[in-house]
Length: 485
Image (cartoon, rainbow, N blue to C red; front, side, top):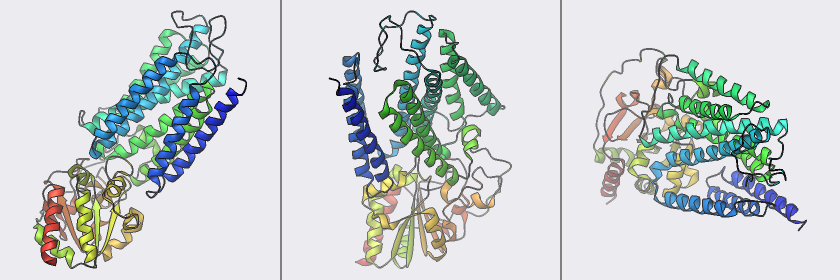
């Protein structure tokens, strides 16, 4: 069947188009669901085409692995709560990086065996479509393939171990930040050692000990790079490791000569890189600081916050918003924890029926991953034209009668603009404090995920409505219905 390779490449081309079109549709909340479906069909087509590659080995094992992976993903996808979605994304992203690193490991072991440095290695590989040569040795890797294989393995290993740490932090299994003196220097030395080991591997010095040392250093660097990162910076970390995984997959695709891996990896890598830049800008951090800085490290003694938090009853808060002209609702991770998005939209609909102009304000890094709040509001059925980004909504806060903050903390903290010693100083925030009145729904008086006290809660125009997010909004709904009765 001489036409089979051409058909496989055509399937890869169609799959690549579906990846790109799917990603394009994901750029808008209105078409994101369809984009995911398109990209999913592209992946299915690429996987099916791969099974027909000439001389493909171990199909039974591959099918078994695919079935296990699909079953695990289906089960977890249906059972994991929306609040746990960020750590699931981090975990799945780490699996992608680990897969790319595993491909690099197999290729490096085969390369070392071809040099006569290793012997107890199987004579077949399911990864390279051209299979092994007749004499039992793997096909020779060109210098470019070898360099890309090493680079992909390095990036994939870093993404794997770093994503596991991010998962553990988000899951609450690990302290949010872990720092020690000289940590940045240690990290740079680990990276330098991993790069040196990689250069040696790429220049015909492959050996079992060197391969093990290379992966050990790469995995350790991923761990050490992520340990000092605070919880407030997790959106940046997730998007960064997403870019890493895409690049790693693309590089390994070059080694395997697999067009689908090359294109899919490049698309994911490019999208992840752009998203990381946007997230870093939203956090007022450079990419270099994301890679090597100790996130959230304060530069001095923080300013003392004067005043006291002033509570308000749900009935009084409902009256304030019922007779307001403009209300802006600011959701945060606390809304996700309380699963209050449906109640919030019910409350917003009641206000709109009264003639109140209602908008939802979204900070780029609100929640635990990019787009977290947008997903929650879309799940509740909030129309997209009522959702405004930070840059669009900030000029409207001075003309806003009431800003209702639900579970948000660091993204509305005025210290980001007033306190140079604050860990979040310089981070663009939602200018909620500029509204005429601010109502904050919060479970208690504790600090946010970054562990920073919020000056907004002590401002003269702020009132605190304490309680679970869903219960508190439910009280607002009940009070508003009583006014309309």
